[in-house]
Image 1: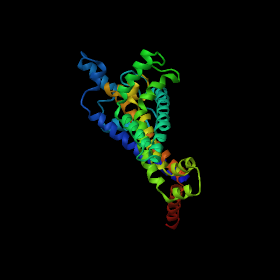
Image 2: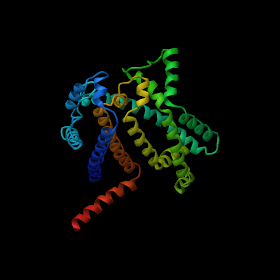
Image 3: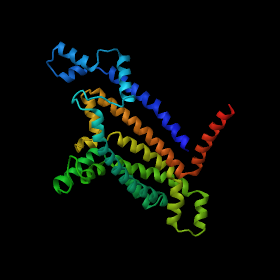
Image 4: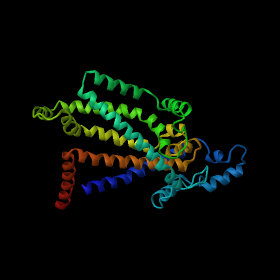
Length: 322
């Protein structure tokens, strides 16, 4: 199992490297002059040339790409923001924990509400519990998060004055953004859990467990749910990777200085180093999320763990034979 993890980590190197090259190339090909954006209107051509020279924009593409890859993957330095002059490494270190906290709270709310709704829908297939759960899921997936965010601000911040409407501070600052961002996750978990549970509860071993007189709660939670975890784990890893990459809309509405606002400000101002750093971080987060998902697969299903072990053993045997 350890060799499988090591192999997956090594595979992350060409993936992240490829993403870096693609993002750098696309940013280079984008129309517009970063020097003009940095200097503003009215700058002379001499001033623009000085800015381009200081940023290395006059160098050939292959030279700039090599310098970027060397700084990023050898020196582990994303450089400085062209607009603010701040070090991007320090900005990421400051902003990433805020996005991480918001993502964790949002994900937990989605799971705590969505998974029980999906279980209730599957157990009561075609009944009132199923209809209620799927109606809640339909409403959750239909409500735009930015619209719900503004409603929550009007109710809990403006009218009731219970929670802060913007900024960052204690845990109370994350409540409204998490509530606004979890509706789509609740719907996704409810629908996925219902589908997975329906496949499982029709199995023969579930019928056998019930015939042995086991309590229904034990049958559902210990036997059925455990064997329906694979698709639930998949959606968890995917959603967490997306959220940690930057919840741009919610962070903008609630003025949370996280990764989302950093990336979107970089895009709006053509701040190439910021955008490139955000894309690389997103690629790393997704790769690690998928690795964690595979490890949870092995935890949830021993057959998958045995498959990983067999793959490692077979490759080792082939090398010895060769």
